[in-house]
Every structure is written in structure tokens, then in C-alpha cells.
Image (cartoon, rainbow, N blue to C red; front, side, top):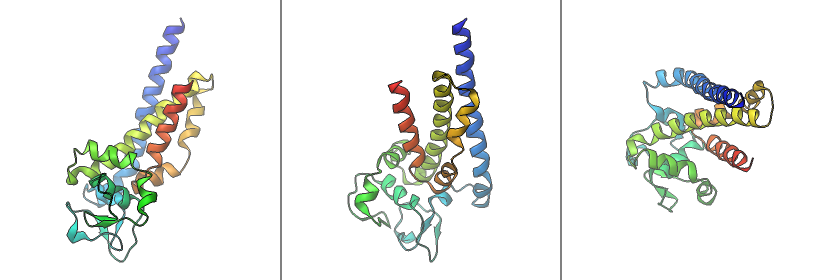
Length: 186
């Protein structure tokens, strides 16, 4: 009997993760439609740090703007082994700080197979997949710890996940890794 209940709970975690990815995907739709499907709109690149003429692939660059952190992770994802402040038309504002958060851009570089034209899509896809993993882990941890199913919603109530998703930053990847470590320890 416990095996059947475990299977049912496992299916709940999978369904919950799928629903979370769908909901966050729907949140992405309006800006993606406005950008005609260009995922680089979420990089939030600004011309203060980005030279559009020197980019290896075109991205949306906001004029007269400092941009946001995602532009620096985008630059690292273009070439995670370029340890210079300026490469591929993007200057890192704080190179040592940005390189401490290299795992997410390294994943994006790997998923994009190092192809500059796919990096923005890879970053967005990784963050969306990360939210699915967080949702699955939250549901699984709720079950493992004997908590009600609704407890897994608390993990996703943090509005920072929407900001991270819409700005191509590292928080989603970091949270997923922390939850993986917690799950592995239990």
C-alpha cells in the first residue's frame, strides 16, 4: 500500500512541476510576444556596458541604460573561459564578483553548445527548467518531511523568482542547487 501512495505522491510532484513551468511560461509570453520571440529581451542589456556593434550575435540593447545583471551572465555564457573584463562587446562591471557566479552561465554555454545565437534562449530555458526542478523538489520535500502538499507552494511564493526569470539572473539556479543539496542530505 505504501508503494502505491509513494507513486501517487511522485506523480503529484511531477504534475506540480509541470503546472509551475506552465504558469511561469505564461508570465513570459507577453514580453516574448512584444519582442517577437527574441529571448534576449530578458538579458536587459544596456549600452553603458554593451557595445551592440561588437556582439557576436544580435541581442536587444537598451539605449542610455546601465542594463541589469543578466547582461553580465550573458557575457560569461558567451565564453566562460574569457577571464578579461571586456569580451564579445560586453564589459563586466565587477569581474571578480560576476565570475563567482559562473555555474549558471557555464550551463547556458554548454546547453547552447557555445553558439552565441542560442545563449539567450539557453539562459531562459535553464531558468524555466530550474523553476520546474524547484517545484518538483519542493513537492518531494513536503512529502518526505510529512508536510501537507500545499507547503510546496511556499517555495514558489517568493517574487524574486519572477524577477530572476525576467532578468536572466542566477538566483533560480542557486535555489535549485540548494534544494538538491537539501534533498540529497535527507
